[in-house]
Amino acid sequence: MALASAVFLGVYDVAKKAALKRNGVYPILLVATALSALLISPFLTWGTGADHLRLIFKAVLVTTSWVSGMIALQLLPITTVSTFKTSRPMFVVVFSIVLFGERLNWMQWIGVAAVLVALWLLSVNSEREGISFKGNRGFWALLLSVFSGVASALWDKHIMSGLQPLFVQSWTNIYITLMLAAIILLRSLRGQKEAFKWDWTLVLIAVLITAADMLYFFSLKEDGSMLSVVSLIRRSAVIITFALGAILFKEKRIAQKAGVLLLMLAGVVLLMLGSV
Image 1 (spheres, one colour):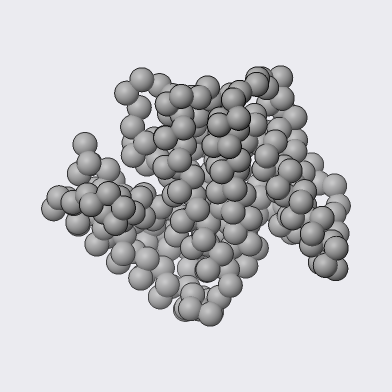
Image 2 (cartoon, rainbow, N blue to C red):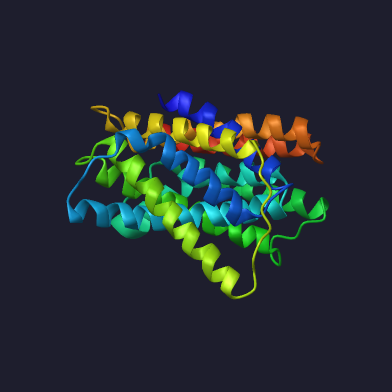
């Protein structure tokens, strides 16, 4: 299920990049999430107030990750964004050290070093491509997307022990839709209204994220499932995103970025193997 989720997620990222050619960040996310909420609505069930508070917090994390991730996709090449997002499992490890006092073994330290070197090489390649991470708004948006995504993944594992997957997915989509609608309304009142043009890619985006999330939540719910393993498999979506992005958008320095991607994936695999 995690592997199938990764396939859908990889195509989903490419579809989002294509949709950005015709619409702004917020309209795309609002319409796609509303459609996703509609698709999953037959599975709506009631829960306790505490359950809904947990899902509202999750919706805040997901909305932050999605909006910042879309801004990054808008401002940076998709091959750069997808490569950088592969580093997410490393940040999970870093936060575990800071928050829970965990210690790394030699294999995990090599993995962290590989990911850090890969991130440095990615920044060097980006500068040669004319993109400076230091002063680029897209890079800071990408960093926010990764961190909020890490927080969301940790929160998912925490809440899935007591909640059903379809309950989590259906209500989270509703709360995200309401939050995005509120953001768009506030932006419109401030004179920051974005034009919207219907695009059938939005339906594709909704179907892909609905399928990807459903499979992801069910995989987390399985007895004995480990967040580290599920996260690693889901991160393999970057391979699909990278390959399709390189072909469809004809971006620069693909060979160099592919090398960086392989180094980063090797580091992530070492991190996961060291935790088994």
